[in-house]
Image (cartoon, rainbow, N blue to C red; front, side, top):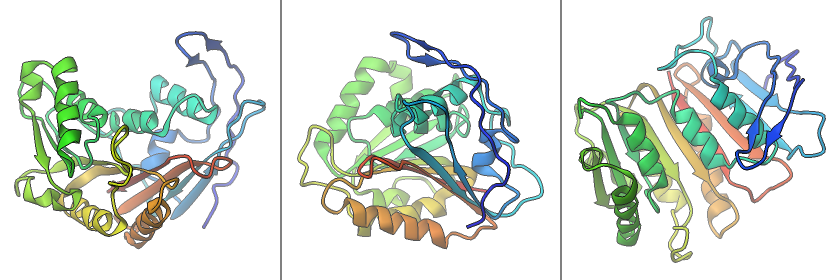
Length: 285
């Protein structure tokens, strides 16, 4: 892997407000993180974040992507927003989870009216987050959600009942099926902007029922086929349960095979917490 030269992150100001857990930082980056995630002049990029603080949680960020002479514009502005910057800092300091980082990245990819897929609904938090991103007055947006467990979709529906309006809920379609079958529910003429995976077992459910490396690989292949250019595959994967490490390695193998001309691949994880969730982004140029 090639490494980014002369990249420095200089945190010159930091303050934490109790209750709101807000972080104020001044960043000195040679280029902003938002285009860094999804375009790079290096064929493969590796970035390590560091700061002079005893609270640093050993976070690392690595990116692999195609060589490009110009940055690829995101759906919103091409520079990182203050809220995204804040979330990344809080992740470095161990105050934000991988799922929270994922939700903020989605905001820079998904537009109102887009079609998205929640490949593993679980208790519905990702489904709800995606719904809020695609919903608009045109009612064109769609969230296709699936899970192999009926109880997971019941939890998802219950969450939507609490936090989504009747009009918003009309944009969500839920299916009891494996994530590997997503092509069966997304119409052929629909361009999907984002496919989200939150792997492992259902929180609060039967820990013996887990996503498997074989079906997850098939699901990733399906996601690759239905994803529109400029779209994102977002994966949160866990290695602390039986089968989790094998599934993570299968995902890494899949990402490594993607052509650099068409994909940028990014992984975030905490180095000193080997069993912590790993966040993986696969961005389609």
